[in-house]
Length: 489
Image (cartoon, rainbow, N blue to C red; front, side, top):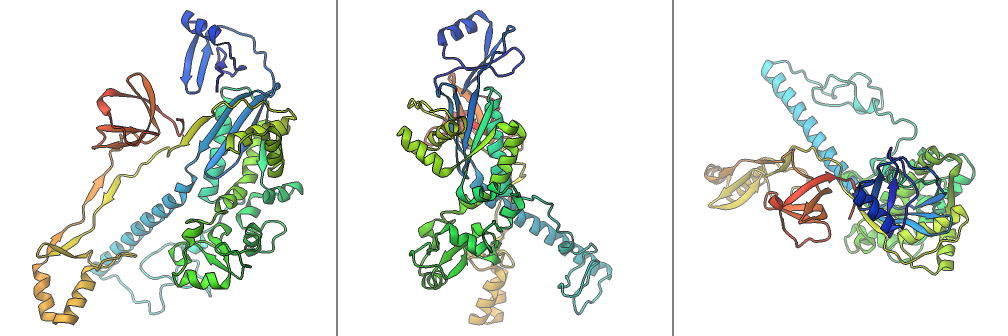
């Protein structure tokens, strides 16, 4: 945007300016100093008046793409941005964390069992061991664990959100707070989608109502999914007859609406027979993002109310579409935000074709010590015949036990033992992360120009800036100046 954002001597935001010559003279005389280059923010070095005019902000919410805009009383756009969030990374990270914790707990249980066997303190439990807190009707647990059964400790507080929805809420509110650090925004408008808007109108909306899939007006999560798909099969458009789990439950899939897709009986049978793939509508169904935003919406709204009080407003998606047509502007996330700001303030925006800021969200920290771990491999005459002693979960190739059984069945146990003695074993090895490494999102300077790091090559000797995947900038010639989770590209 072609404006300069201004802070007073104490760091509080003032009205932005387009008096570029005046700004240049202030910087040259030392009466102001640059705080940031993207966006360009200056801080005055003298006491100034705090006269401010109303500024109206708005958010076009989304799971992956978020639009932000601020307009003044004349309808001029003083800030517009498109934010690309990392929300879709969260489920994979949570899945990895769960698998690591599961492996750690299993390893600890096995160690305790081995210790008990060594010390002769084992006890037989023919029907399984009933731990403290056990009640009839609940399956007993096995192994040696002297703590209360985990299922008795699972209590979620009121308003609990999934990590995916929580991250969505935090990203939206963090972006609003960042804008308010350099613009004195007086009010903010949020677009509510039609499903969440129905709940908001009756004044009894609660976040957990969305989280449990019990939206007002829907008897079940299946009814909610049916409404989202307009009652039509996601693959062929025929009436919905069955509801299919996108990620199977045995692989950790949930019963939440975002993991359900409505299919007709024919397509449902074809998907299970692998004759049709849900990739035709994407890995996650086309409305999964909408479901997550619906879950997060009440919490985003509550956060805006805490920040702006009665000056927080809402509008419907249809209102935004009508305003966009009236202005004759292209459908983009930031142009929708401009229209939303106009709806909330009652001002007709003046869209000037200016390019918005582009922001990309990066992971704030990665404290993982282990970068990767190789599998134990077994070679016969230089050829890999097995990996791991026992097959790990969803292992594709044979494990040592599988290989031995197949050879014994084909050539006899004696020959299998002979071949087993000839196997060459390569132990599992770990590669470790450098905890002092710079993470993606780090801002650095190269030949006087600012870049945001996307990745590294050759053990960190070369840096890859965002938007230039084929570049290799020498690390020795780069100067790191900071890190931003929401980085201006």
